[in-house]
Image 1 (cartoon, rainbow, N blue to C red):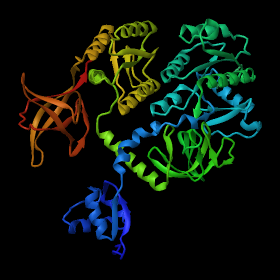
Image 2 (cartoon, helix red, strand yellow):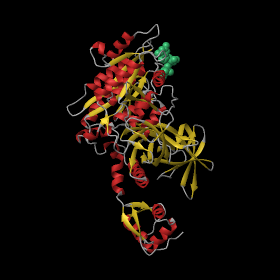
Image 3 (cartoon, rainbow, N blue to C red):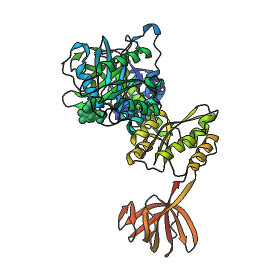
Length: 593
Ligand code: GDP
């Protein structure tokens, strides 16, 4: 389709940079039409090539538009950071808001039961008995005061949100079963909550059981530096029974007390900012997301951006499935009208209109793509010194996993003694067992590194660490940990690599190929040969080449690896002067420190 110039130029806002295809969309012509117009103006560009405003404007004018430059570049630069740091609200506009509470604790200590019994005992707005729906969060009311509960218990969800830059929790309820006491995940939860700087209320659960021993729980908590009131500290403990519904009001009253002290406030009269706590694709309603409003009021009809998704609030529902037209600070609302399904932890922002929403989403996508191409900014030992020197880093956060408690304590003590005037070393979580997903998330959320002492890393945790740039360092000797950290603090840390031999192949015949040069027809003597691996070619005792394996062939097929006892063709980069009897050694490098 070609749009002929009309008598009066039509206004169009064009970003500082866009692809040929995007320009076509803006000008309602096909990309081919844009390419043709560009060519007549001496510019050769393909459909996905990015062109600048000036070039785009020529095409726009050609097609009868009156272009102006849109300030997208600014949005692109600012969008990833602006969200939470929006202009602060004038204190005069702030009003008290409900607290948002997350329930954490060891498995089977009663988190789910507690959330259920709170929900059933105290449905908000006096509608006890109303059917509540699981939407990821719910509100209850006690003495005219509303409390919001996130109903995905556990620190994994809690820290996953934080790792994505979204902290929603104001108060953490730590559930400890009175018959079981403080367990590993109790401690993990404490450390995760502490890293987030969130106040804790302890619910000592299952007090109905004959083996219940609340005093022992209090003592154990105090040993883990959660000093409860009975021991002179300020952490409130409340005895409860989730299944017998004992102590629930008392617990909620204490939540209100802690909330009051925290003076939680928000400005209900501004466009909403929120966080997605749950989302799914509903077969009849399309993408639906439970949004927890953090500030402002979310209204039906609002244009929103959620991460890299734009949309418009077509309809909203509360936790009882009722239609609502607005949701204020700390209220959860199921939102319909997003273009795609967002992820938990994605931030939600109301913008002027759908057009702005799309622009922001576009700019964010580009910003992310650009960021993905540059090195990640997560702290690691190689760059530690520079960050300290630049004054960017005042604390080195460490998550420590070890084989046994004794060694974790020893390493922790040694590390903490390394703190200097410039940088403080803080072990925010020390525990036994392999490095888990939740450790990596904690490191991610706290910008920390993980030290694995005589312990392994779960494969999924390794994957997550690689994807997010979290550094996991494995050691088996204390002084090496200390030495590395000391060196990193002093800026002397040099990574050391060890060579690991993967296998050997003997050249039995040399084939000529017009495309690939000489191919070494070889027999694998030992190990496994992998394409892309480092290699050296040995003739007798002499190394005559060191390069990379470009290709491996089994008959006519290209293969990724070949095992001992098989024949294969080996192609190397920059070397093909093979002689029968040469040995090709395959190796890779592994960091030794
Ligand atoms: P979660 O893993 O922390 O979510 O724990 P659950 O809520 O699933 O509870 C684990 C088990 O403890 C279940 O069998 C519950 O019925 C039981 N339980 C939870 N709270 C209580 C309680 O207050 N008293 C007793 N006796 N059992 C409880």
